Length: 78
Image 1 (tube, rainbow, N blue to C red):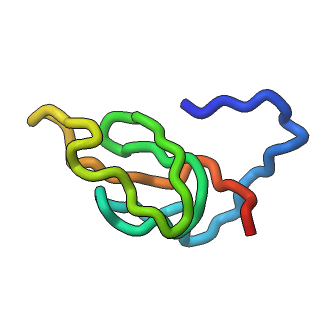
Image 2: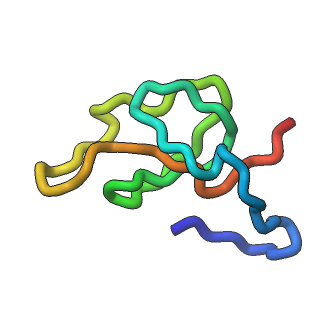
């Protein structure tokens, strides 16, 4: 779970397609921010235009779904 300290410095997101998309390991990051793995809840920071971590970044057991990254907190960079 992502944490924040200053509620005056974060905004509530409106519905936009970039909040709903899921990304595979190695896909290009479309928006800088914090992403959460939908299978295990691990979080990463990712920069726009970089690739998401490779499949071997962390492993899921056979009882978990595949690694998919979903935007949790968008960084205001543009």
